Amino acid sequence: MRIFLIIMMAASCCNLQAEIDESQTGAWYMYNYKFAFDESRWGLQGDFQYRDWEGLGDREQLLLRSGVTYNPEGTKWLLTFGYANVSSGPPGDSDSITSENRIYQEALFPQVVGDRFLFSHRFRYEERFIENQDFRTRYRYNLMLNIPLNNITLKEKTVYLAMYNELFLNGQTDIGSGKSVKWFDRNRLYFGLGYVLTPNTRVQFGWMNQATDGADKGQLQFSVFQNL
Image (cartoon, rainbow, N blue to C red; front, side, top):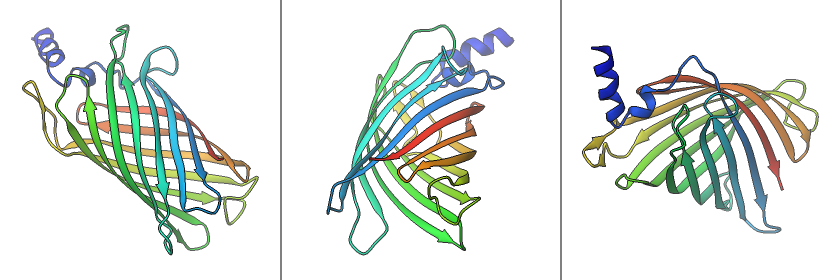
């Protein structure tokens, strides 16, 4: 009976989740950049991520994302229109890869509470073109918080705590070929520690729990943030 259930799950749209070893901590390696054109409200920002199911050696995902940014006059909002290329692989020995092209629109604004609670709110809407699936959309909201420990602001040589929680919701449940997903896609909860190396560079290390409908897995995150 158990073998039958495993076969049925592997044949379903959720076969990837069914094979995930939740006890195996994965790792995400991330580089984030931001660039502002001189005397302009326009700029660029993006991130490059390599995600691994077990640390190194079993690629989960390679994500390359960049966008054009605009800061409306009189606001702290940063608006982004961008594109991402994503290639994902299942856990284990399989070499199969699923490709995705993604367009996204994003709005981010900072909020300071008290002397040193540095919040950011990020709203993102994605249009997703996934191999062998119908066109899909997704809504994301990320609440981020940085807390400087030895300074009031994130200036050079500052140690800080970093936290975030991001909720993902699918825009539709039917993804084609008789397959479906739920409205809830995933939730990411993160805790980390960061250090400001220079006025333009930060490094960060932390742990994230990613909960989906079919799996609940921990990830180590190694991040670099740069203002170019």
